[in-house]
Image 1 (tube, one colour):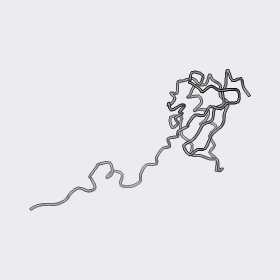
Image 2: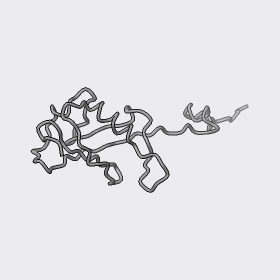
Image 3: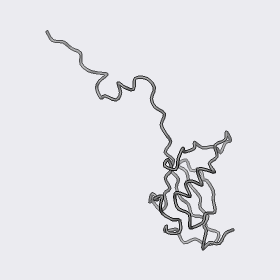
Image 4: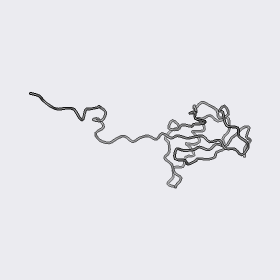
Length: 123
């Protein structure tokens, strides 16, 4: 295992309760670097562990102690819990997947009330 002064073990908890890791990360890594590592190592095969993959790091949010982490922050600058040599830090990983566009009739749905206008004619 790496030196705890320069690295830490991090587990990423998904919304469905599954975990990624723990992964040994250097404390000099930025949050953006962590997201890039997660994206590069993402399981995308047809195994039972496969999860929907984010397209970019912009689709990922890391949360530690209730705070959404900014991409420019360095892991060593974060208020990590007091960790020993065998401790694991848990971060929450939120994935925002792209929603496929709705098919057919989308133009009518963009204008509120356009499909249900009153067409009464009083003469």
